[in-house]
Picture 1 (cartoon, one colour):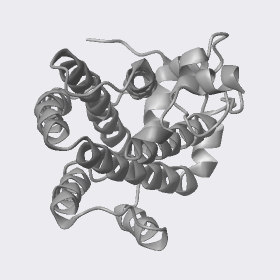
Picture 2: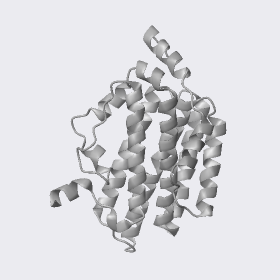
Picture 3: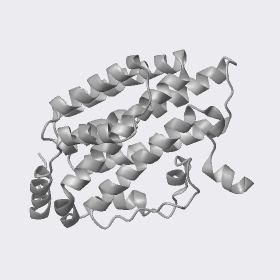
Picture 4: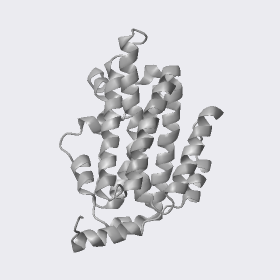
Length: 255
């Protein structure tokens, strides 16, 4: 059994006070331009969001841990399927797309480590649910990509945009408390690393080194994560127009 010192106990108590109004999240989604998707993609999307609302009611950090656990799966899936396509000689998109997807997974992995450092994975039930959901989600995405890469990317765009709405509501709702809490050491190590090549690589809509989030408080950490998710949205939208996807570093060299 882990023994916590006074500082850790105080942090846990403060984190337990954080809230997330799920109705306000949906209001944000209604008030922004929608992500265009067919009904048979929107159906599973709404079902997944409803499930998260029910299971993680009153537990935002655990919800974020679950989201980041499954958020890595699309990029694992896309890399796997791109390798399969090339192995079978069906489709060659070059190395850029695979590298971008690897950078996206690298980013989501650090989001996951941040949520773990905040105690999002403490309950066995949450870990069981998250790990098994990720397993099945991976294979579902493989099937979707096999049928239509555009459909798979469209579904991921929906999920990533929902993450933007969720994190946005969370930081606005808890701004005062979050600004009083220290940043996660995992977040500092990631966002203030000397080598941010991979951080720049997944942000295909902007030039390398053009975005450097500050992480002076836990508020800054969640604002940075929200910004990351919006960059994922733009990359997923670009992937549905294959000719627009390229490594930001490659574009910089060619400029």
